[in-house]
Length: 57
Image 1 (cartoon, one colour):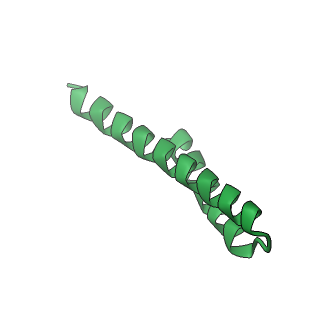
Image 2 (cartoon, one colour):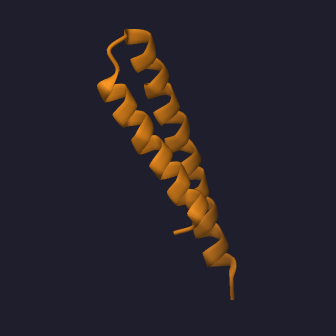
């Protein structure tokens, strides 16, 4: 796993933790949107890593 992928996963987890501890609805929503964005970036990074590993001889 690349450091970039791990960074994205860590940020998604932190955003989820922030959402869980948020008191205000708008803050919770913002954190959940951030978690979704970080998770999508992690998925793309994982897909890219997989394609690169399949392409190597």
